[in-house]
Image 1: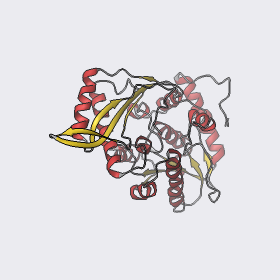
Image 2: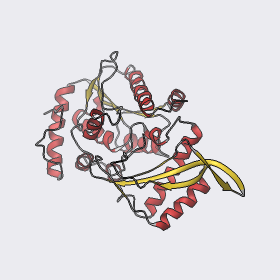
Image 3: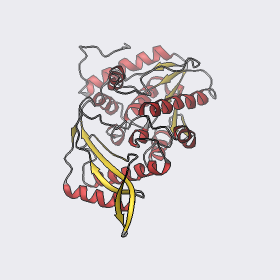
Length: 327
């Protein structure tokens, strides 16, 4: 059964049995929808797209081509991880596209959050179209849309690259097998599909990537400050045993400078904001209480190891009133 909306009486997927029943239902639905045609999947390596990839591999095998686009807004080491897991371990048909310059050139000087999202989303579609033209029989585009994406888009909270239609000049039909699920349900399905634990329980990462964590017009140096500070945060949370306990944690480097002192000299540099939240369905979120000694270590490492940053702040705002991401 293919649903356009989540049924009001749908039982929350909380057990392997319910997850397997959903998988069986969706495998059959995908087979009926796709037939013998080919499907193109936007594979970011995140939880949602990874679960969709595994579902489609189970349903249609090598009819699926996964396209991993490195838009220059990924976390440190991420493209390499996607290639290792999906190409080397899962033997998926994986096309890797390094489009860093293409994306960052189009984003140069753009500071409006929704415009940035639209540029990134539209460019993704263009990249997929180019890859699709290299293949024969591709009629479908698979996406990792989930239920909170649809709800927040409908409420006008933010635009989502994966919660809307394709440009009119493209004839792709959408395949969205997990679009009626909440994030915790997607993880249950991923477990049932046998995906690696570190992939299923990896913290969520937005489609526009670090672009939504670099508020204001994106510059390469500030983007690199986000990437490096994020890597330090992830490393220290892992060491402290928080990696599997905190739902989502990341750094933000806004386009704002303040005066500081480095090596006895005035340093007019950016601030780094740390955000760590816990939630079950991404509709509301509470703040993680990070131990003070860990915060001190993070401040020391980020201010000394990341060029351009002289202050570190911790965001104490829950959702509501803040959203989880900044843009």
